[in-house]
Image 1 (cartoon, rainbow, N blue to C red):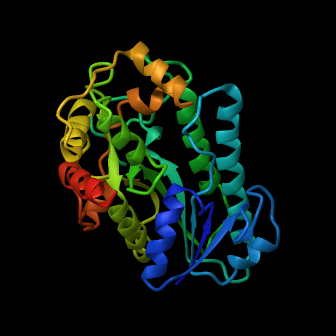
Image 2: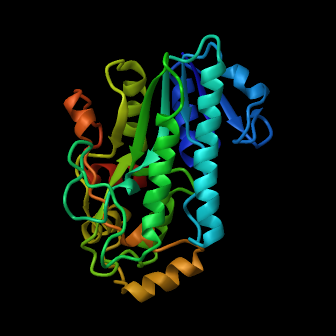
Length: 306
């Protein structure tokens, strides 16, 4: 297949491009960076010709969430996701031979802060919730607007799938796994604020396999949870990470300690404290089988390869 990847130079795009190319597909990356087909992520341009006649588009574009959640950064997160999605929709709309399928990155953050399982059919979409910071609601608002931008695009010949993606774990430098592994190795991988909040995750190999599965399954459209079937509490998640790293103690952190650490890393505590218990109902119902369904298997594999 010819697969176009808008925003394909980020962490996920890096390994996804490698794996798709290794599987024999032609991959065209759209990016502001040199060495790729140029686009600005907002407006139609010569890049749109790459979608005309392509088999599929997998849109990964969007500002990184690894930052302080200031008003400016939150607006950039919103604009970069919505604008790029609308631009892809316009390019498909005007294509004489539109791609058969459009996979659009979304996020598991769309679900409410909860310790209850959330699948696509019964999961509770987040909003204004008690006992959590008010700005967390804006993250959910971003997720809703992101998906709505794809849903509202006029693409009658193109099947649309929203990838509600959990934290993607890859040994590549700079990703979430790299940060968490470093914390564990330096003895900072203990429970945070009690550690009962759930962590949803997916191994990079299963992410790529799920993308290929959804490209081929013509009967699946709409939101799909891209997450391993066994999320677990943060304290268990990091205990397993420490074991994989050969570290058997981890300093616990209170909420205020987490705030200080996030400030030092120029990140935000929502990434640590929001409970995301997301399960892949539609993938499993469709017969998808995970290579890494449990975190213990995934963690040891990723540490061995990192």
